Structure formats: structure tokens, C-alpha cells
Amino acid sequence: KKADEEKSGSEAKPSETKPSETKPAAEATKKAVGKKDAKDPSDLLIQEFKGHAGPVTQLVSPTVGPKLLVSGSTDKTIKVWNLTSNKLATTIDIGYPIQGLAWTPDGKVLGSSSVDERLSYWNAANGKLIKDTGKSGNVASMSSMTFSPNGSLIAVGYRGGHALSLRDVQTDKVVHSLTAMAPVNSVTFTLSGQSIAAGCEDRTVRFWDIAKGELRGHLIAEEGQVAAVSADGHFKAEP
Image 1 (tube, one colour):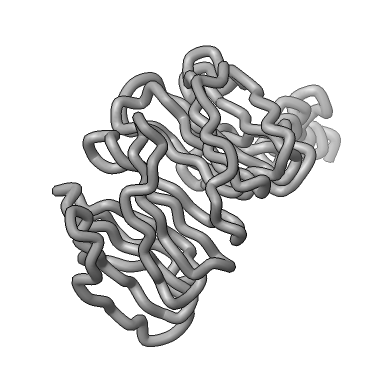
Image 2: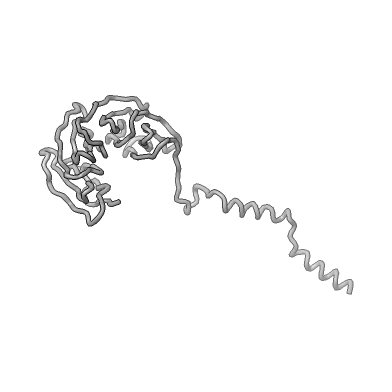
């Protein structure tokens, strides 16, 4: 009987687990349910930038040059983030809530508009003001802006004024004032630079000939407002 008990006890020992042996496994489980590794493909968040004291209203990145992300906020500042180091590179205090941001095609100059109806041009490298055009002359707030493919023109859309203006970047003169018939949400140049498109709150996208300043046509969305238009004019986005 004693021999049988000793045999039974010796057979049970391999199945016994000491507390010290379970600790690494417990830690591994705890780590697994904690914060996900940034390289985990199931984690959709790639990077998070914090620094604004108010809602972010604008986000733009240059198509050429350094990997940067620029954010504009109601806290009256523009922040330039370096996407290589994931650190804040520059903060620009505008003094008014930001309503529009746009990069020149060469990625060297950043254009901004704010609720005081000013167009400003900034050196993207050091955040210094290059020039300020003063008030735009339109009593309505600016809603969006973009540079032409060759950088010679800047288009500005307005919400309250139901209008779109084309200005010469060098002289600051208005080349064309275009009537959109509805608040403008977005403006986009075609890749050729020969036409400008405006997405409006009345479910339309209107196209103008830049040289003549004449309306070429319009598209009507099935429902909702038009939030954006692709550069080739073939696709639109609805909120």
C-alpha cells in the first residue's frame, strides 16, 4: 500500500506547477491586454499629436519636400508637425481662429486664412511671416483655400458670401470674383490648372474656366452637401 501511495505521488508531481513558474505567463497575459504595440496591424492608430487648446479645423500636408503635417485650430494657432520625428516643429500664433490652410506646390510656403478675413503667407521652414494681404474685401468668412498647380494663383471659397475668388499670389490682386450661389465648402484646381471646382452646400459642384472666369457647368449630388472634389474632377465626397 505504501509503495502504491509513493508511486501515485511521484506520478502527480509532473502536473504540479509552482507559483514562480506561472509568473512569467501571467505577466505575458497582462502585457497582451495592455497597450497595443504600434506595429500591431490590428491597431488602427498610427500616431497621435496633442498640443492645441481648441478644436482642430484644418489639416494639410505638402506634396513635396519634408514630411510635415500642419494643423489649424480655433485656439488661433497653426502647428507644424514633423512626421519623421513625430515632434512639434513650429507653432505660429495667428491671433484669430484658423479657417483655411494650403501649401504652395513646391512645399515651401504655407498660406492661411482666418476669421479676420486676412490671407497670410508663411515660411514653412521657420514659421516666419512672408507677407500679409490684409482684409480680403469680402464680408463673409473664408471657408477653404488652395493654390493653382503652378503656384501663381490662390483660390478662396466663402461661406456667407456664396462666392469664390481667384487672386494673383504675387500682386495680391483679385483676378476673378465668381458667384457660387451657395456657401462654398471646398475649392480644387484641376490638374491642368485650366479650371477651378467648388463644392457647395446646395449639393452642387461648380466648374469655372480660369482664363475667362466663366461657369463651365455643374454637377448635383444625390443627397447631402459636397465636402470635397478630386483634382481630376471625376470624384466627389459627401459628408
